[in-house]
Length: 467
Image (cartoon, rainbow, N blue to C red; front, side):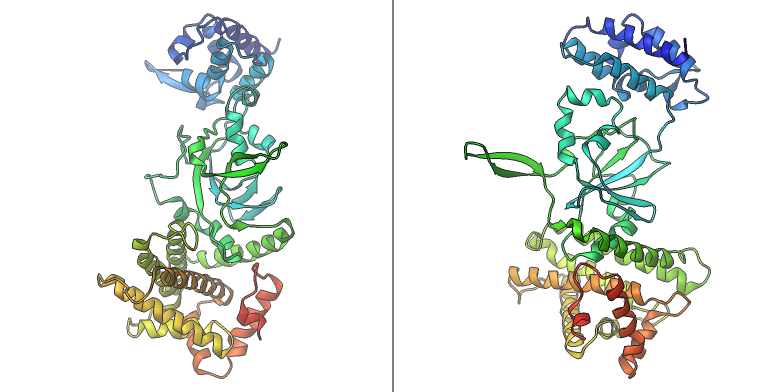
């Protein structure tokens, strides 16, 4: 008889006695007092020794013993016992097999899963540096749960319905702790959009629609995916039933960032290209050369301010009026971070930003338009930081101007990435030379056209298609 089978038999025997419990919810202590639990612990010691599976053990009175909380609650075994006591038909063989796998399989590496307010086609899987953007099927999600068999006999199945096919950015987090309450608000470090900006930025640059992080989960596949439906924003949709009467159904709120299946290859190519450019810039973050180090930090600063503004913008009409001016400030900071040379004096900053931002666009009409947008943004910024309120715009005009500034800032970031030299040169000097020289086409136009032709975003910019 193998040691794995011995563990399986011990679990089955314990479940038989656990079924005689009262149907009221039982604590871990009560479950531990049931006959044969000691046999389960002894079988765990044989089948999954601490040297190979330290995550299953805890120190008690100076000795390492099987951790009852992990074996009962985290594994899902306690939930199975409670369901049996309530008279639910639970597949005991599958539960026992799942518990053996839980104990004897390798401990999974914790991951961070970011749920995006967006819709992507089924089968999406796009590498974004260390991250992966993926939509999961119901079966794939079910396999992340310690006791998949229980998912069909308890209410949790509805929870998974909410996120089946939802887009997640996931990344290994070896040093992360496996928490019981995944939540968006994590006060142990920077907010999620700041921590994961290198994966989020390429997606944002591909489409003009807003993309936000709805919630963040800590996942240890086969160990924990403690999904709480309250962490998944939902909306109500009305579908026509068989009798012609509308039926209300709760579904996940997917926002406005929708990617059709036909666009997936283009999005993948775009993300690959932009991720490579971001990685090239960020490789200088620890470089001894000042220009490379400052460039990396400025890109990160710009991205974080853009993401902060995105997280506070539900849609183009969904900005708190009291925050609209503050969002202007986020976008202006992003522009300054990218378009001010690390070694220049802080004199004439506003004019330098207007000039260099316009130099990134082709055609005199577009350059004039860009200068106007930046000038209005600086006026709004100045008004805000001096404690005043912009009074010469209606709320509708203010929101429209904010959207225009957002789209411009994204274009500046994208073009900055396309044009930033890989050597120690500074893009600011290149843009100044283009403004005052006659070779703008050679310095700016050719590189932009080449990029937007080979790996375009979802919509080619008007100044590129017009020339």
